[in-house]
Length: 291
Length: 246
Image 1 (spheres, each protein chain N blue to C red):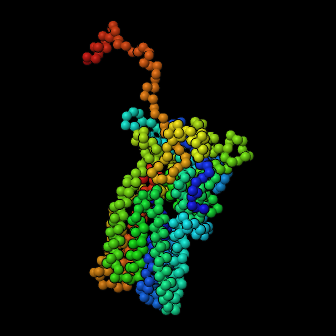
Image 2: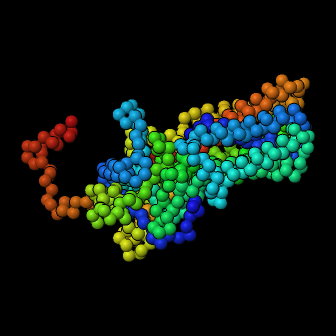
Image 3: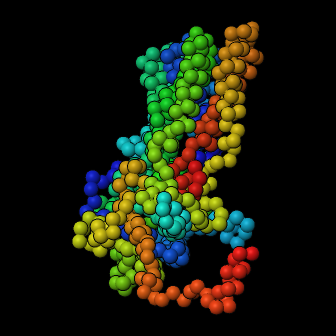
């Protein structure tokens, strides 16, 4: 799949933003006034910024309000509804905490749950697609939730959780890669099943329908850059979990180091999310003799 | 709107005969022509006369080479458009309700006024049947020429999809798969029509007729004719034998 910057930005930052909000809603950290304002501002900036980025890839963004209507059947619609509900609830909660030093626990709990559900809905947009076997497995929602939880805990300074979340995210990410690498072959989609010509013999593409690319090949048959996969996986994991963790455990942890570790974590998340898209193989590629 | 109907009254669709398709691309051209001039946003081209021309098409013809374990390789021309699946995954993913499957005839359509151009339906389609138009930003797909098949302003013989009407090899057939006596149902029964990528569970309405087996002995008269090239006799025979020994 084409790793569109708007989608990578959207999934990474909305995940981090809602991850932060899910902790802030539980009163972790228990702050108020200006400190709380800074925490909420960062969380809202990431969540809203991510959602705004997602609208950049729309062909007709002026009709985006219609995306709130089909929550009964569509994960994308559910995600839109949940995101707005989570932001509105957490907005009210934040006003209480920042300006009135009042924590309405029930409101925070609701906002926190909605934030987690939003991330789950985002993950299901991808996990539901049988056409992309690498995404169509249990690891996708678990991974998206863990990315949000880890980033959220890290950015809200929940240091007691990091010795659990960093290793867990690392392991699940590796499991997702290992399972994902076999997933297309295991699903059994081949050019033979795609054309129905398998009962005659082995099929190969003789001639593409046209001499140049088209929407389908540009959007869904992205094979450029896959050769650097192993390097990018290592770089991704190093900056996503290993280096921030190392800095936390072995270095004198101050504000500047925390900022550097946070930026490294974001860089790592962007790298692995790029791979999430660039490595995903869509069944339509078969018709074009590629995967 | 984005939930699928439990069942549809009719199941309109196409039968594509891979045995007779000659790969002329006439269906591609007539489809592009009709659907640019009629219903919905036109099918735009970008850089049509430049180095990398791209454009929106609802029907494209691929060509494949099939090599059996024994025997000669054959070339199969393979037109592909929306299969109007009974369990269409493109419909249920739509966040706005723009994509829908009609209860009355099973045609899968896009209401372009509601489409935000998110492209998720194209991702959900295993077959690559949907293309986002780069000029209009809305999703385009085969409408089964819904503006032809019910159009009483057209002569009756033209009330079928443009691709079917134009096919010079008669490789495309249009009809109702819900009716077991229809032309398409009978063709599928006679020729063993197949589903594309059945393991995706989309239950496509359109069916493909596989190429008929090639005859092994194509020339039925040859064995009855006397062979022309016989062993040379006389001087030529001597020359032939001598040259062989050298």
